[in-house]
Length: 327
Picture: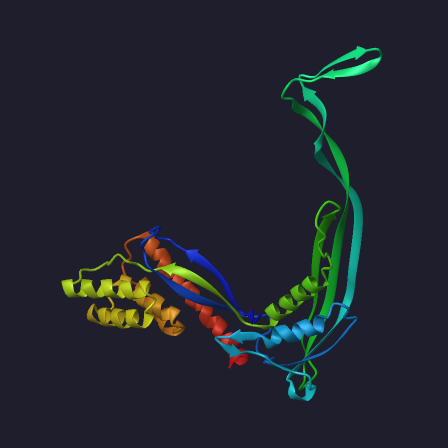
């Protein structure tokens, strides 16, 4: 299964508190720890003490990273073809086990019934029960259990093949805690695979750009007087956004913004938001700036506009920093 750099979790940001307000999906890019160094041609070298098969997991994950549908890494066995070499050590893989007993009620055996009466006859205890007894106290069993703590630590080093400089040197940790009792179905508690996968994911997150997605409200209250024809066009733009036809929405909003001579912060903001969703960050940033200079009627609208401005400022800085990695 491909390791998708794009995070699939959707964070819904709603400041207008309107269930009917159309939303636009925005993609935000996050920079990795490594900047200004291209590591897209990578060779996975020897990892010492690799009892968890970490090197193979790293190769598999690197081979299955795609950004915008394009394979991001070229993974080589031949180090002469790579611009970076990944090596490392498994520092330790420790397992701690602790035995304990779990108290469990045994509903098959009752120690005391409600309404019981005991009498002695000829030295023998006779139990006179009610017709439909109710158990007041059940018996209990002690179930043997094992708690297993496993800790894996690895140090990974990424080296530049041109000058042998160290691009990244970092120690990664992963742990697991499992409990298994004799009365449960047997579960394989060998966590080597999961812990190694987790360390591989941590490393890839450090060296690879990643995305998350946000749903953000448009402003659907027009702030200036429009003609009947312009109002109809604005409704068409909102419908296009609802239907995820952002190119059509952008064309309509551009036309309306031109007609109103950049005097509507609603039109400017919505055009900026659509441009941002279409990955035209520089245009979006310019439009957010223009909208922020107008007379904004509500605090919610003001927050939306300035969040968009700050978001695109950050994205411009990130994209500029990522240029050597993605291009």
